[in-house]
Amino acid sequence: MFRALPRMLARPSGAVRTCVLVALLAVTGVAILELVREQTGTPGFLVGLGLALLPVAPLMAAFRWLGRAAPCPWAQLWFCFGWGACTAALIAILANSFATEWIAAATADPSNADQLGSVAIAPVVEECAKAAALLLVFVFRRDHFTGPADGFVAAGFTATGFAFTENILYLGNAFGEDVAEDTGVLDSLTAATFFVRIVLSPFAHPLFTVLTGLGFGAAALSARRTGRIGLPVLGLALAMGMHALWNSASRFGEYGFYVVYGSVMVPAFGLLVWSAVWIRRRRLRTVAGELAVYAAAGWLGPAEVPALASLPARSLARALARRSGGRAAGRAVARYEADAAALALLRNRARRGGPRREPDFAGRERELLRRLWLRRATAGPALARAAVMEELLPPWFDPLDRPAAPSAAAALAGVPAPRKHTERAEAPDLAEAADLAEAADLGRVRDRHPALRG
Image 1 (tube, rainbow, N blue to C red):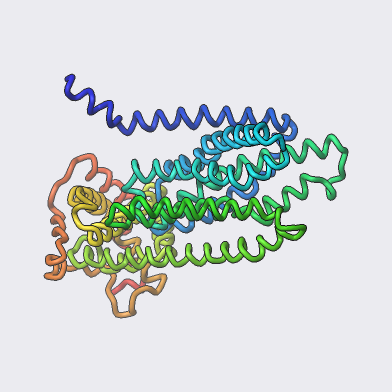
Image 2 (cartoon, rainbow, N blue to C red; image 1 turned 90 degrees about the vertical axis):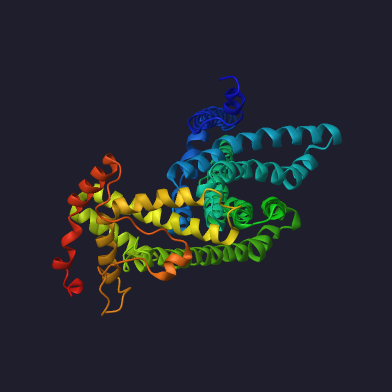
C-alpha cells in the first residue's frame, strides 16, 4: 500500500484533476468578477457585461466550425473559455497592475510606466497566462490534441474568454467616465470603446493566441523532442510580438492605430481565415484517406467514407437518424462520426510518428473500432443515404454493398479484421446498440429511397 502511495500522489486520477480545475476556475472567476466590479462600479459592470457578451457567441461558433471535422469535447472547450475568462484574466490584471506600479515607483513617471506596461509587460503576461490553458490540454488531453486544428480551436476559445472579461473592464470604466461627465451617447467614450473593441477588433486576442495554438498543434505532430518544445515557444513568441505591436499602435502618431490595423491586423486576419479553411479541408482529406483502409477491411461501409469526409453529409445523416428514430438515433450517429474521425487521426499520427509517438495505438484503435461496430447498424444506413442525397457517389454505386472479407491491401496495412455479426460483446453495449437500431429503423432505407434501390 505504501509503495503505491507515491505513484498515486504523483499522478492523480482524472476525477481529482477535474475537481481541482473546476475549483480553480470557480475561485478565480469569483475573484475576477468582484475585482472588475470594484473598478467599474455595479452599473458599469452590468453595462460592460451586456456589451461584452455580443461577440462571444459568433467567435465561439466560428472556432467550433473549424473543429467540426473532428470535434473536441465541449467540456474541454468550456475549460479553455473559463480559463481565459477567469484564471488568465485574473493573473493578467494582478501582474499588470503590480508591474505598472513598480515601474512608476522606480521611474517616478506614471505616464511612461503605463506605456511601458502596455507594450512590454502586458503582452508577455497575458499571452503566457492564456498559453497555460493550451499547455494543460496538450499535456493531459493528448487524445484530443491531434494537430493544428485542435490548437487553433483551443486557443480561440481561451482568447475569446479572456477578451470577454477584458471588454467588461474597458467598457465598464468607459461607462463610468461618461456618467461622471454626463456625456451624450453618440459622443461617449463607451460608444468609442465599443466600436474599437467589439466592432473593429473582436478578433484581436484570438489572433494573437492562435499563433500559440498553432505552435502546440504543430508540436503534436512533431516526432522530435526539440520540435515539441521549440514550436510552442516559437508560437508564443510570435503571439507576444503581435500583441506588443497592436498595443503600441497609438504611439505611432495620430493615425497609428489605423495604420497598424490596416497594414497588419486586417492582412493577418485574412491569413488566419485562409489558414482555418485550409486546415479544415486538410483534416477532412486525412479522414477520408485513413478511413478508406478500414472500409477495405470491412469495418465501414463503402458509402460511409465519402459521407464521413463531408460535413454537410454528416449533418444530413444526423438529421435523417433523428427524423426516423428520435434524438437517441441522432446522438448515436453523432458519436459514430466523432469516433470515426478520431480513429482516422489516430492512425494518421501513428503512421507518421511510429510506435514511439503512439505507444498505446493498438488498444485505442481496438476501443474505437468496438464503439463504431456497436453503432454501425444505426449510423451506417443513415450515412449511406446522406452520401447518395449529397451526390457523393456515382449513380451506379450500391451504397449498401459490403465487402465479404478484408482485402489483401487492408491486411498488409495492419488493420484488424472486423468481427462477425454473430459475435457477442458486452451485454449493456449490445443492448444499447440494438435499442438505437430499432428506434432509428434505418434498415429499410433502401425500400424508402428510390436512389438506393438496386
